[in-house]
Image 1: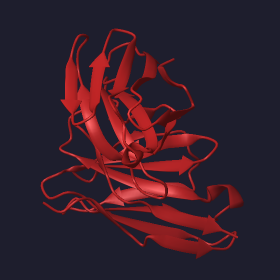
Image 2: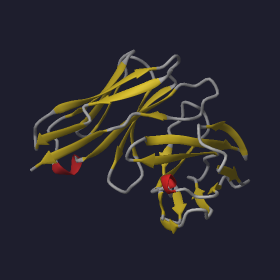
Image 3: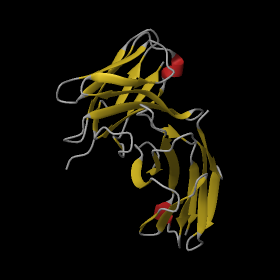
Length: 111
Length: 113
């Protein structure tokens, strides 16, 4: 069965302390791996889409990478405004137009 | 370009009632998906529509239904509400291919009393 697991469930960092979030997936045919950021009470905000192993994308302090079994979201020198829940999801294709989401990582960055 | 809009933003209903939620996709997007988000289960897929046709459905009871109109706007309906239906209902739109990014709206917070 296709599934995705995110770790850790929660992460507390000091401002400027870099770290990585993990998204491990088991899927028969990956059509896309997506990262979103979600603030409390709001809809997920799109960050990155990755399609093939070895692909990397960057945006400000965030960098997403993809291997055949997992994806990482690297956060460099985080700021308090980076505090949010980070969600990863995949689409497995095969006439599946749905995203399967992990439970997310709640990131808190203290000033 | 305007984002995905959802109405209403908040809704309070009682058990047994029914509710209709509305979603307007990003201009040019023909696919609309619906998700339910709860603290315990996270984000779960409800259904997806493309050009007024349901292409995919998640594992939810038949009380949950939806439709899409010719202008790509979509509605979802929940009949005979149960306490467990309290959740954030999210709509997402995309161009329509399974590789396309889905962009989410702000959600409708449904509380069932």
